[in-house]
Image 1: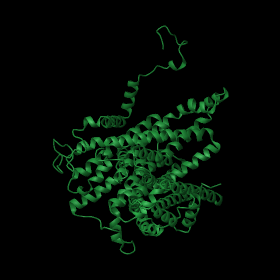
Image 2: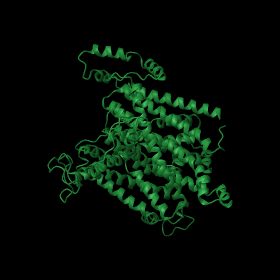
Image 3: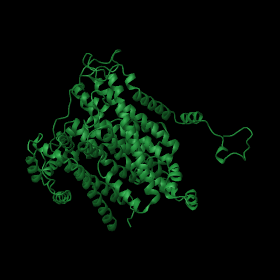
Length: 315
Length: 300
């Protein structure tokens, strides 16, 4: 097990280094832009640019810049934003609680919707409820989250003059207000995820329900409910958790869109803002941050298999 | 090929089984999968609409000539927008960006993904290791964040948007193709092809590719819907390639943001168009998977 963890950790680090190299070189494809971005206009005097390059360390060779940047990044220093001159890491830290909370709530919604649907579909395989639920999930997969988000902003406001409180209140400051700010975007975000989770829960449940230990459980005289929930469901969760890990990145993308629709000051809106400002330092920091979290989540997902299925032993 | 005088002995082996005409096999599949067949018809209609959009649209999409924010009526079936334009014409013309980018992206993703999948599955060894790690790097970035990043750094044009979306979907294709190749690699006909001295490229092209073609087609058809969704999300965020003269559904939805409350059709129609297109391609892909390669259930 320990050996497996170390191996996976090493892979994760290699992938992260490759991602950072990619992001770093892509940003450097357009060197002239940095200068005009900082100045806010085309430079009148090339000397100005030289000074700025020197200040930002852009006069050094690229490998030196990379090593220096990564060295700082490891200590939590992603540099300063080109325009606002604010600390990029500080900015990310300020914005990230909202995005994390939104992601967790969306996952919660998705699980609440997906697991019952998947289980019912599997238990009633090829019956009317199964057909209906399968059609509903494939329809959900087709509806863009940003459209559902749009509807959830427009129609409550139009019909009941209701809108979620604007901005973001910390959870421990005013828990109810905080939840009210986030439940609609979280719902819109969770809906798309729930569709694919429900489909995988169904097919995984179908497989598990045919196995011997389920028949044994039934033969012991356990009621169907216990068999399905206690025996089958837990064993059916591995593919669901895997899919969740794979979909986590999609969830991050969704936060960008939904934060923008609901005007929530999270990491997603920060991404869009820095993109629109062409602030490469900030974009670079954010992309690296997102990638790190995604790689970490997938690592945790891989390691969590052992908990769901104790037979899995890493050798 | 066959003449009336030919006997069973004269026929090449593959002619022995009575051939079904393409029409009759299609009809057979359509009866088995009615939902998939309807979806296929809708997909075909959407493609035709996209191709003939300039002829079908009653007005140019950027013609500013109508009363503002009229609700749907006979002269404007989808109403008019906040900038005095005909929404019906804009919706029709928008299908071009969505489907154009969607198809191009999936075509690129399939071509590159299938190539990488076959190479790493068949050759194994360091090629496999290298390709797998490369895919890990691509998967290491959240898709939409990656797209936003690419379209910030590089110019936003048709090629770059399509390529960005292709990179997002390529790893899925490569992984599924790789696992299919692994399952055919050790079969006897491959061994026979090796034994008679075929080179690896020839074997991959003539023997491996045709035998993993079904999963390739299935994955591609399922990805089209997702690629359309991604393009719509990018357009919605203002990172697409849509302009006033060549709108897209995502951009239409974003542009109408100030009037969402006043004009219901401005939010319902572009969103509905995206959903219908994606649903049609998803249902079609689903049916195609059941017909061609049921093993892929749940894989893509």
